Length: 301
Image 1 (tube, rainbow, N blue to C red):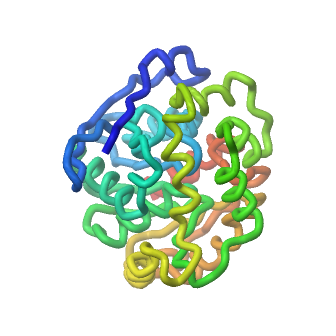
Image 2: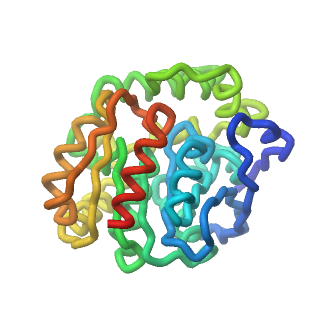
């Protein structure tokens, strides 16, 4: 597997992102080592909160939330998925699979950082990967926050808005990641903020990860990830782990998943599930402080 590494100077002077970069090396199941980048805020002995981004963002998405969680005494950890942000980038689309991303994140969270009693916060692909981790390693998790995400099995069709995004990524000769993030927010990003989402990718050769992810979402019952996701659904619905749904009010892609998760997950029963107002798909951009406050209260309840 050919790995690319973004030069560190690409991350200089990003707006509101002055967190010190950290790195962990993980062993790839197919051989070799992969460097995973992440940022962290809050006391090292605080309850760990694992903040997982999705497509096509990176840990920069959590810049508004990290200080709020840290002020609440939580250890907020935001890694970059392999292929994104400061993490190493497999150079070929074929190097990416759903199973590999689950394995890479498992190695980061449990082998490299040895996290226990984790609060998972998953949005977009952060939930698709993170919910699999919870189902397959429930002893490592204390609670779950699902924010504009789901766990598709391919047994139901994806909404038209998702297919439009899928086709736009597939057909783009130049993948303008800042533009895609802007299309999923209600607030207007500054030119520097949009540029920050493109910063990890000096050229198109580095973008195999963002290009690969839409095609890895299970969209048919016989998808390679469907069986594992069905098994994860069954496990998650039976777990007693508290499960908070914190969805926005304006996400056409994942919005219909909120009521399904609330009624399906045993751990969701009896909880006061907030709706984050005036926020789109990337609710961390539109209402990051509000979402972080809900998470902090949930952990400290």
